Image (cartoon, rainbow, N blue to C red; front, side, top):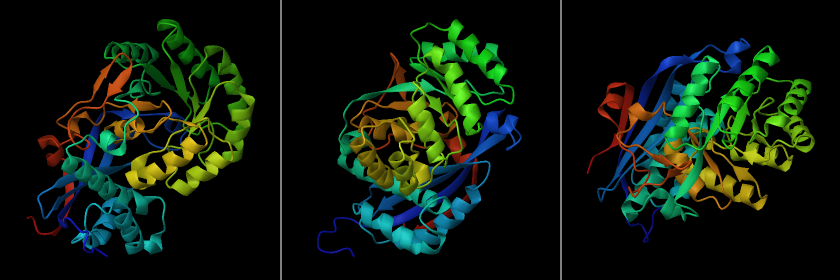
Amino acid sequence: MAGDATIDRIAHVSLSSIVLPLTNPISDAKVLTGRQRPMTEVVFLFAEMTSEDGHEGIGFSYSKRAGGPGQFAHATEIAPVLIGEDPSDIGRIWTKLTWAGASVGRSGLAVQAIAAIDVALWDLKARRAGLPLAKLLGAHRDSVRTYNTSGGFLHTPVEEVIENAEKSLNAGIGAIKLKVGQPDWRQDMARVTAVREALDPDVPIMVDANQQWDRATAMRMGRLFEPFGLLWIEEPLDAYDAEGHANLARALDTPIATGEMLSSVAEHVRLIDAGAADIVQPDAPRIGGITQFLKLAAYAEHRQLEMAPHFAMEIHLHLAAAYPIEPWVEHFDWLAPLFNERLETRDGRMYVSERPGLGITLTEQARAWTAATAEFGTRP
């Protein structure tokens, strides 16, 4: 309960569901193996809030293929409890929001709805302090190693993948991730071989199977990939197969990276405790926002694990900059139409800007893609 130490109160909250159309349908191994359809859009849940003293914050969560309307609906049900709260009390607010929707649990869609609000609270706090979020958290570095994913999807011909990789490297991005996991493993080998031979041998490469292999196939492919000196093999198995990932991590020289599909801190802890990942890949919007991410980051550091947060570089750049062990940030250009600002990349790294908070504002185009809105409280 807000008491004598309260310095401000949340006066107004606006929620928006924004549908971002993708220029080309996106296919990874889940599509080629018939598990999913090509992805044509990403649905974002944005939370914007204003305090009585006029401080503002913006945050977002997202869903791919399904879940966007559900996130928005849950957020509209729990958002009224925000009005009158001190925006500084972020941890307490997270708990209050969780209890407001306690019957649907503490993972998945429920916490992803909270995530947009939680990120907005951290953005507001950093803006009020006049600091980039990374600096508010306590940065270990002002730039983070970055790699590109969006140019290496399986729907893209290998010649175009190579061209995309060269463009990314010329734009200052430091490494290239390739999608694998096709029904014919020889196509994976040919694709990785072609890219490896086309690029400078010092350019780091990693591969991502998007959970498409069984244990025997993952072990065989991991051994076949060993000569490439890959930076990591990502999601070789089902996201919840901690034992299988742990077996691979023990058997292969190539590091195993996984975790992006998990939707709570508890699920990540189980993965870490099993020794299932050399590199953890949490996604702040998926696990409940920055508050939950920081809890997980502390545990991952305690276990001396590397980190490469998934997607949402506008958020994860700041969180990676505050992680003690040198991390990686995933560069995606999909979200560019949503924001007026751009993140600088050079010499293989992504740089934290001097802009306060997350340093992002929504474009008019993003506003035009708004599918639904809800408002609570009164604008000061």
